[in-house]
Length: 434
Image (cartoon, rainbow, N blue to C red; front, side, top):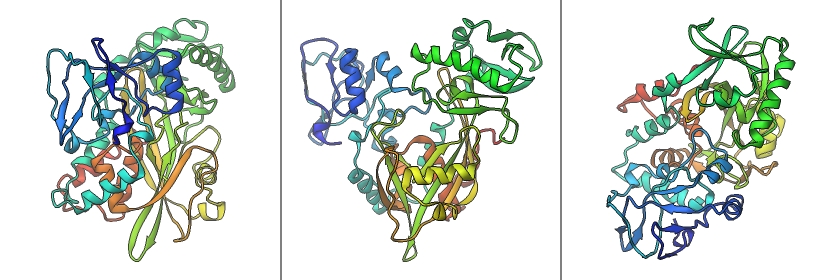
């Protein structure tokens, strides 16, 4: 990270405060308007590395956390670099320096990573450096396993959730803490004990017999909770509520609310690659800073959630055009190659996602052009270097790493001779693929 990414801090206050210009514009404006500032933790003292001073541990006050709209797989500076890049922390009872120059952040909590934290030059440097490093053998799968673990947290917290039941079918799971918000809407939500699912559960009033009635009733609740900031990042995009992929939708729910109800979520993710002189390269996108989730992070060439009322194939064609300017003629050549899945619990949110994976071999002269403003830029990167970036950093949006790791298996970049091969392969489908 460049030195100018973090301002020098001069203060006589204790604890120390500073602002981070590396936040995107929307986040900076929120910080100004709500007087949200960044607190440098007293728990760790500066650590010197190669002549520069480095601080560790940064946190944001709650208003900014809520404004950023992250509830699951939230990127943090802690995960920006893997353990191989981490500094040893130097704990001290109190940090009472009156002047500090900061040149790099290596550890933090709940701070969304924007593109100010890394550049394409950083991506290429890490990819090439790790490729040339004899210590970083391609057979070392530890970094890949860490990325999969990042998408599968909190299994021990399942006991904190209640089943969400519609027509005697479990369609989701709701945290007991979050149900307190729903209890205010007693004419819509019903709480039952020891029912059809063998325990306490949440359901909708029997007065809502039709899917469209349920959709309207719950939408009114979501709007109120969204206006209060309890469910941030409302997208006005509906997800189907159903127990499995091929089941009929029992009603539809706002996409931003889906993790709070523990719904099954589906998406389409496509690896677009080029093969030249026997070497495969992947087109990688860098998300726009205006994205409400994971701004500035690396992403697939094309990816998107699966809304209500559209097939995977049609949705992929739509996303290809919007995100990369890929024509339908070319998009129709994409090959469905399987799925990955994960289950992640973060506070009140429970993500149970299945991602349908596609490969698309592109012409050598193809250059993607974003159409919807959600991608800042694209780069064509050799697959081996992409693998290194995934293994050594957390530059990629977390679930994208799973889809690319699956690509590495299928295209022979991860081989059975590697220790942990089967464990890694199996862990790509930790979630419920139904």
